[in-house]
Each structure stands twice: as C-alpha cells, then as structure tokens.
Amino acid sequence: ATPDAALPGVGKVWLKTWGCSHNVSDSEYMAGQLAAFGFEIVEGDAEKMNADAWLLNSCTVKDPSQAAFVNLLKAGRDRSPPMPLVLAGCVPQAERKLKELDGLGDGVSLVGVAQLERVVEVVERTIRGECVRLLGKRAGQLPALSLPKVRRNQLVEILPLSTGCLGACTYCKTRHARGKLGSYPLEDLLERVHAAIDDGVTEIWLSSEDTGAYGIDLGISFSTLLRRLCKILEGTDVMLRLGMTNPPYMLEQLPAIATALNHPNCFEFLHVPVQAGSDAVLEAMNREYTRSEFETVATELLAAVPGLTLATDVICGFPGETSRTST
Image (spheres, rainbow, N blue to C red):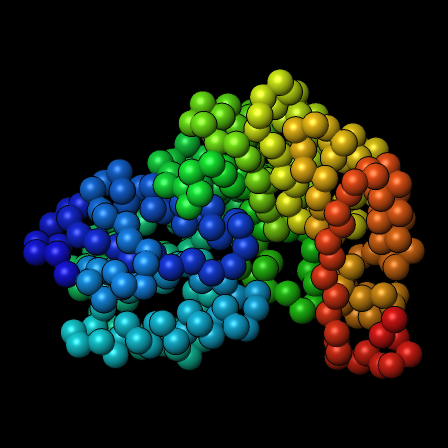
C-alpha cells in the first residue's frame, strides 16, 4: 500500500474489467480520470495486493463473469485488513439485491454505469473508509466522450455510440443494467473520432448494446453515422470495426451497411446474433424478428460483401425448446 494513500490523488488503484467492449471503454474512461487526478492505475495480478483500492468493473450478462467478480469481491473483503473496493459496472446496477452485495459495510462502494464521471470522488472516499452508493440513472444521462481516457490498447479507440437498448429479451439483463436506448449526438461522436486519429490510433471500434439501433431516439440512423465516419477515414490508415447489431434494426439499412463494409477503411466483419432458428423460440425470447428476416440479413450482406466474416450467437436449450424446434 502507498503511504498517505488517503490524501487526494495519492495511491494505487488496481483495475479489473469483465465483459463487452463497452465495459472496456467505461474502464478506460474511469482510469483516465483517476490518472489525471494523480492515482497510479495498475492491472497485473502481481500488483493486486499492493494496491490501495480495487476498482472492479463487472459484467452481469454471463454467469462466469459475474461469478469471477463475486469471488474477487470476497477475496478483497477476506484480506486483512480488508481491501477498499469500488464495485462498478452492470452487476451493482442491475443486481442490487444480490446477496453478495448486501451488508458489505464501510470501505465498499457501488458506482453505476451512468455515474462514471464521479469515480475519483468515489475512490477517494472509499480509501478513507466510507461507503458510497451512486446508482441513480436519469433519462438521456451519458458520460461525456471528452473525459480523460487511458486506452487499454493505445492503437484502438473504443467508441461507445449509445447506452441501453430498445429490446426486452426475456433472457437478457442488459436493459436492467443499461436502461433504454440513449444515443450520443452525431457531432460528439465525430469530434471524438477526430481526436482519436490525432492521438495516433489505427483502429476505431464502434461499441454499443446494439449498434444498429444507434440514433433512433435522436431521429437519425446508424447508416448516417457510417457514411460520415467513412468519409473522415478516407485516405487514412485508420480502420473501422462495426460492433454487434441485432437483426430488427438492420433490415432497412442493409445497402448502407454493405457499402460501409466494402469501404477500404472498414473491416469486413459483422456480429449479428441469431440466438435460435425457430420462430416459436424467437417469439418466446421476445427477439422481435423471424428466422426468415435473419436469413435475409445474412444472405444479402454475404452477397453484397464477398469477403465478409459474419459472426453469430446461438442459445441452446432455451426453456420450452424441444428437439423439433432446436433447428
């Protein structure tokens, strides 16, 4: 531990991140603010026990990630003296009644996905032994893209397009953690891309809970964003990587997305989850598209983008699924 770690901006913070690229981006922004204030950010396991606080940015979508988070939480509290812990991300936001979060006492704080701009305050107070709870969300509340940032990979800019989603899938906790769709203004995103290029990045990764839904809440489209981004990247060595997008918001944008994927500054890769091949199972999942509509997305994109790598997800053994419907 660092002498005088309770002083403002003094000490080491060990940062651990689970989950999607959006979570990685959140960690980069939290690390940037802490570093700008004077904290030393460490990430290797060898540094873990020498830190003055742990910042654990969690994922609740998959059980293994949540279990790993809970195990590390217990390890921190079982240490003598207990490690000051700041619990961030989707677990404290969506799983407030999780038994492992109950009765943690002083020196353990919770910071929600919409409160990233207050992470310095939370870490400082937690190191002093206080217990802080910042889990509130307001409609349209998005962390500023201009916040200081420490990139995990100095050559990759992870650009969050929005937070939340428009879906209500019966198996997914994302809506509980991230809320309804809230998109960043187009010009804010373009400004961030220009700044990242000036920083010397070679890749821009578009990240969101559903990139294809970007801008619906603002009256603009993902297609518009892609056209503007491709124009900015033209003539540079910077590559664009599209993030995961669900089928419903792809159907009307297929030509524009194909054009972007064929652009020399865009990776020929797209992740479109199918989840099931049965309309009955898709309806039970509340996925809002049919097998035929997914096939349209896949077929048209593969035909229009000859070099395309199309990734997908499949959930096996969904409740109520039978051998007849598991096609």
